[in-house]
Amino acid sequence: MALSLSQKQMSQLDFERFRDLIYKESRIALRPHKKMLVMNRLAKRLRELNMDSYSDYYKYVTSEEGRREELPKMVDAITTNTTQFFREGKQFEFLDTQVWPHLLDPKSGSTAVKIWSSACSTGEEPYSIAISALEAQRHSPGRAVAILASDISDTALRTAREGIYTEDKVNGIPRDLLHKYFLKGAGRVKVKPELQRLIEFAKINLNDPFQRQLRGFDIVFCRNVIIYFDRGTQEELMLKYYEVLRPGGYIFLGHSETLHGMATRFEFIMASVYRKPIGK
Ligand SMILES: C[S@@+](CC[C@H](N)C(=O)[O-])C[C@H]1O[C@@H](n2cnc3c(N)ncnc32)[C@H](O)[C@@H]1O
Image 1 (cartoon, helix red, strand yellow):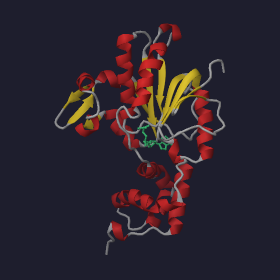
Image 2 (cartoon, rainbow, N blue to C red):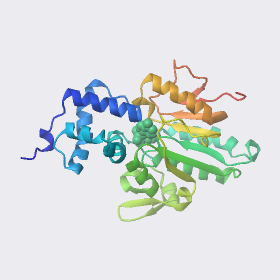
Image 3 (cartoon, protein in one colour):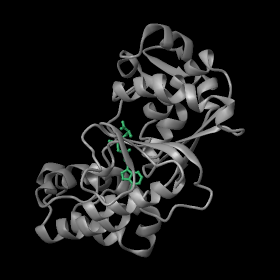
Image 4 (cartoon, rainbow, N blue to C red):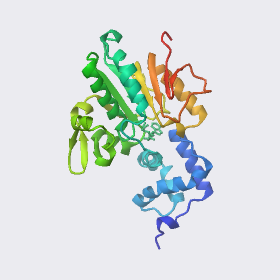
């Protein structure tokens, strides 16, 4: 008799194995009380594979074929992709008033301003940055803007690339910007090509070594992702971000994230915003 999902149990041993595997793959550090969360999030993988037990699923995901075919889907299922357009409004105000006027000025550089939305989830963050950049360029035309948007989750990246959202996701966006940058369909909207043209999407695991081409960013957004990592991983990541930013470049974190007490050379600018010192 097939077991319903609610009847399937995960042994403590399996939970610990999954925790280790998830940590190894993504550095997402799940606390000991997160067994229910892991069970719930992996339940859909078991359902899709028609498997009856978490032990069988663990065996499969660690097999040669499973590592190739299933492991990315397992990590994907575990990630939390909550996001929204213009999240952390104060940071967008700071961008508008303090950052764009200077960065867009041709005297600041001859190439495009480079931004990295490094845990972009389903795309709301990079599209908000693109809108903010295009609006700023109306007042301060000058340098072009190029945005790299990356995430570890294939599913989130698929949505991000498509740029199609239900109306409830965009109801916080001011009406004039909504009309200007989105096409309206039945109960859904699609971002206009002029936003998509500014953004290149890629799958990047933040805990892999950063490729050499990731260099010279003016701003890195690393928002609401380091909360899932342990302290050691956060510190390693900050060293890597330091390297990819140009001197004077900014790093934006989520509102509950801080570098306070961490061994980094970033300068504090305002809550959750830091800067690589100029001349370093
Ligand atoms: C809560 S969302 C934050 C989205 C957006 N930055 C924001 O603040 O609204 C966290 C994102 O981090 C991604 N993530 C988790 N671990 C990651 C890793 N090791 N490398 C890259 N992205 C990761 C998840 O897939 C998820 O989309």
